[in-house]
Length: 467
Image 1 (cartoon, rainbow, N blue to C red):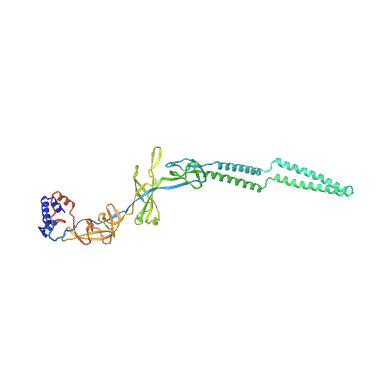
Image 2: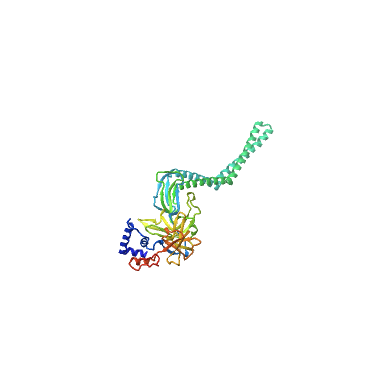
């Protein structure tokens, strides 16, 4: 090539070449083989060899580096729904707002709920008074009254018994008839039964309520308490609170809208921590390990370089659509900035992120990426073997290879016959054929010297010839 450059910059050579071209182009003048050989830079009949550049095959320890693009997503996202049906009376948030756990988001109309709770509480007070009365037992006044009634009945019984005896004496003497005798006996029996009834009532009053009555009253009171608690819980459902700290990323209702139970109100995202989700090809998945760190690039105005750790490798790809990429989650802490009185997250949902994973170091045979020849049949390389008889020339052989780990400007090449220290073609391989004889390009420094008017390579130099 140095010879060709020297000839190109030599004015006399250019003029001679033009004359030779004109002579060969004329129908009256022939162009001999010697002339053609002189124009081609070699003896007559000699084929010019393709020029190539080669590089050395290396073997070294490299770490697999996998770079994939994914998206930033919150670690927790919740569609917060209404716990009850009703009309939205209050709505306190907007999209983009930060809310704390327990903060009120919205409230439904409460009129009917409040009336139901007030009624249930009134019934509860009645049940409690009833139980309290039973638990306190009979009052002294009640006991005294029952005792007085019993004494009066006993006195009446004595009186009727005495009258019955007198009537019996008179009846025996035929002083009274049978009717009068029967009336006296009936009155005495009635007085006796009255005493028994009042004595039983007195004993009940004195003993107080039965345990069964108190237990029933307690059960009625407890049931009413549960009713009040249920209504108050239903009221709480009508007030929607934030389940955790986060940002409102979507509004889904507003004041005046009727909501059924389970209808969405807002979408809340937790952004203190975020995940970068990427799909990793199944062939590269073996180089990713749980808990290992990964480098992340996110194009933001505040910070571009981040570091996270692999928190999850989802063992399922979206194979129904033909994908063989498995979702990998890389978790990292977010940062926050103050802007016009608001605290905003630097990493936001949906941002594009580039994640780089480094695998365990492994020994690999490396070739320059420029040596790859790609075709529909796959990747291959051309290996150069020099000829001792003609320095700077040699023969190339094509090897089909499988590529592996990428390392800077090199890539792992896998073939049983490929060994370190071999020479592979890195320039000029596109036009080569297997077992073709080739010539090495001169060193860049020689070419630069030739272009600058220095010494040109001699006939024995690679790519050289006579001027």
